[in-house]
Length: 365
Image (cartoon, rainbow, N blue to C red; front, side):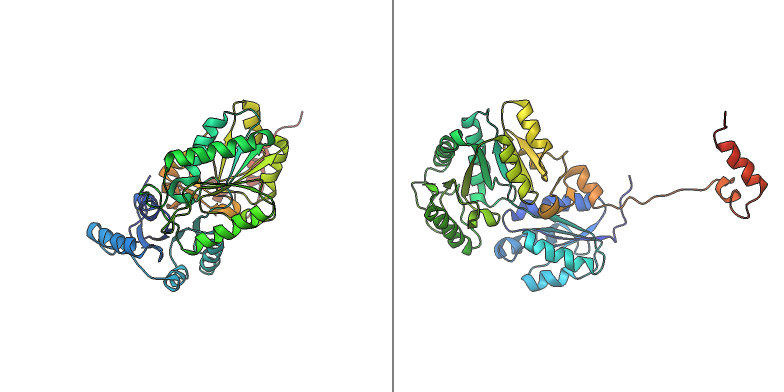
């Protein structure tokens, strides 16, 4: 399949939580499809943005790949320009504004957003294995991952054992928080107070809060489990995007599936279970961008699988061949032969056309 002419230009803005990966991974797909690109990194990581600009300038001519830095005003101005494609990674709120601005020039968009990605424990499940995977997926990068488990739905009798097991796994992985080089801080700084308010509200409403014994320092928020939070609280309102994990008990699997269906479609869904029928029930009655069964985060690392959201969690999918297709335009070509039957059957319509049509119609018995 041929690539697009090099004059095609894709504009790409990546988020701040994984600035290197979210800059270069889509860029590979964009360049493989024969495009040029302009990258607008997040203003929340200025030192990395400067480093990225230097590295790109060393590897590419400016007319091939360019990095433009600046704040929201620069991003807004770029979004209003007429590119062949806009790729944005970030929040649903900002993604909606990007789509609105791009619509004015009919610029197609790929939006990798987020949402409240659930982890569902089926009634028959290996709790220890699930706790290990959930702790890994939730607390890596201090919860600042767009496909991190946002909350867990667990059978009532397993909710407390799961909460204790997840916290134990977090303590094992991160025995200390404040000066641990393996555990990062929250960006932006306001995220810490937002999480404090949400956890405090849940605790005052009667939820059980399990905290890492190290309270953290230097902007590092400790892993925190909130058991049975209020359904209308701050933790339920928006994507948490931090190391706070609500665990919501359910009575039946049907109830858990209904709870997921009542919300917007998430970017990811995780299902833990040992019974095929239970897993199939979850997958057939829910919608999400992607799924990992008996694990977390792993589907994003499979380059042969498309990655993207649905509904509020995003528009379009890329990675690997799906990325090549996303950033290409399938242009149709057809060469007419010397004898063009369609034109010969055009007007004016006479007996010849009637005879041809009669020969094509089924004969009556």
